[in-house]
Length: 77
Image 1 (cartoon, rainbow, N blue to C red):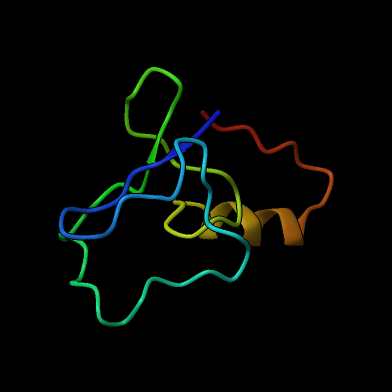
Image 2 (image 1 turned 180 degrees about the horizontal axis):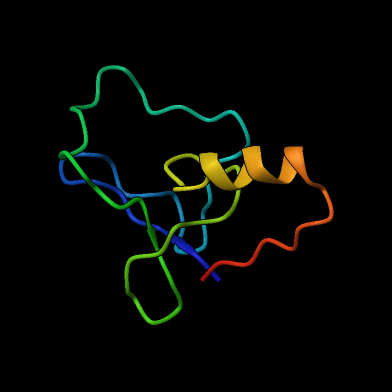
């Protein structure tokens, strides 16, 4: 379970379990997230890489690797 972690000065998500839909982008009027901001928290409230393909998730390398070798099992916390 991952929880979206809004940066300071962004509106709060509409609900506790809200996740940005595929292709979602923040409103350009919102301030930039602080450098290195982690957009996802795990079930224990600790920083997480986030769900694969979600906005702000740290997964670009994992997706590329899966495309090269679809037999790989990708796991993350």
